[in-house]
Image 1 (cartoon, rainbow, N blue to C red):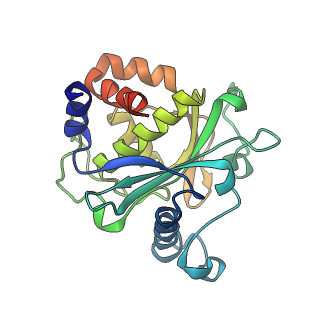
Image 2: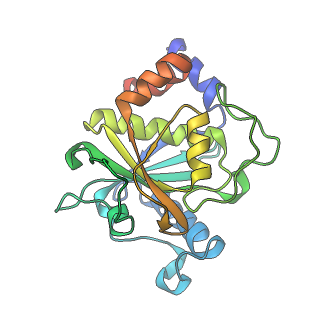
Image 3: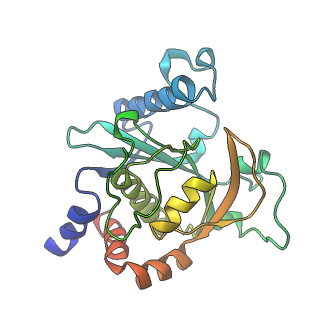
Length: 241
């Protein structure tokens, strides 16, 4: 047991990630919807408040998604992300906005893929200037400009969410992750050894973003070479479920 707990103390000591089941975890999922409203309606202005009754943001993809939250020691929601699964015609939300791909890009099978969506951190937990990233991440760049899916992220919250997505993906035979994000966020993930490959030009999708894809087998090899302790911590989430 100690071998499993030790990595968590290093990479995400202040936060714990967990999957949120909307119909089972009702109060927790309402807190998630309220955070989504705060970020997408009040802070970023991506959505109109009048279109989100009750101060909670939802959309048509929620029923076809796996939801994850990062909780602080008081069990309050500090961050959120979802994995959107392919729809009935095997497509993803980003494909309705990022319709052009770079030359020679071949998309992986939809049945093995999911789209990272609504990645966000609560305002009072976003990384402040001078805060240190987790072990293994570079500190040679300033904080990025705000990105639509997550602005100035707390590294611990980000890692706790990615750990949960990774565990879910392994358990459900998902190998590829899509994400529409700003270049600044892609650079952060690369420095944290989560490299995504850009597959299309930038477009307006809740702000200027480009589509990216990551192969989890490639990410595993990169982490095994550059930060094996982080990979062990990521994998330990699978053992705990």
